[in-house]
Image (cartoon, rainbow, N blue to C red; front, side, top):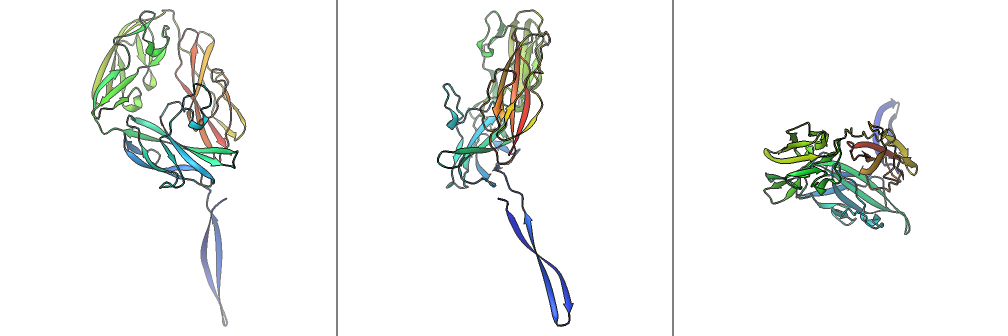
Length: 353
């Protein structure tokens, strides 16, 4: 139901013999109905690792809310299965950072701990469970992105891998899966050791890390801190963050057959109605050599939904019921037969009531 504000406007005063007439106009000003949203912390807020902040939501026009669950994710992390939905064997469950109830202060919020190991852009996802009777329930969500920064200083940079790193057919590290092809794209697992004793992942550029390869003919640096194998030989990867540096020697010995990495295309953004069937499309993904592609889809924004056929070119899902339009984001990576990966591609699906 829309809210209404009652205002009184005094207009003019008319005089006639023996009569003074005041006209009063009642104006009903309709205020826009508000959607469920996070109001604290604010979008874009700068938060401190490990600090306690107040979580507060505006319920908007949604009623019969039972509880609100809060989840932390790094900006590009996959959205994990929520606790109530972990019914399949082997499901990965995202533990809630806070479960807000009606008797909390503020209602359905409370003290929320920022992850101790958080650094850089992070997503805060709030999922409100709405009761529709004993046998029926649904949920609404809101998500914001904040920036998390530790107060501790960076002491040292390390790599969660073998040193030196062997990539290829001989002595290959298991940290990167099967790497035996030109064009393979991977991310280096880089961690920072901070003065507060906490080890934080700093692989992404958003955490302040930069990369340099001593031989761009062996490994070249791509966007978002991704690395690509372009030739055999040795190189040294130098990582810099907050004035600290570390170096990793890498020996690449892969199949020297030329192979260009494929290109992922996740399709155009869509706007759909709640309850409709939605199909994503990676059909425009391509491989320079014309080889068949392997597809891998995942969800990186929005409350978790059941995405079917995630290893096919055209996965699908049923658009959830929403009270206000909400945006879901999906990531696609494709791999060719020789093992070369694409840079991720993203697509947004906006669901309207």
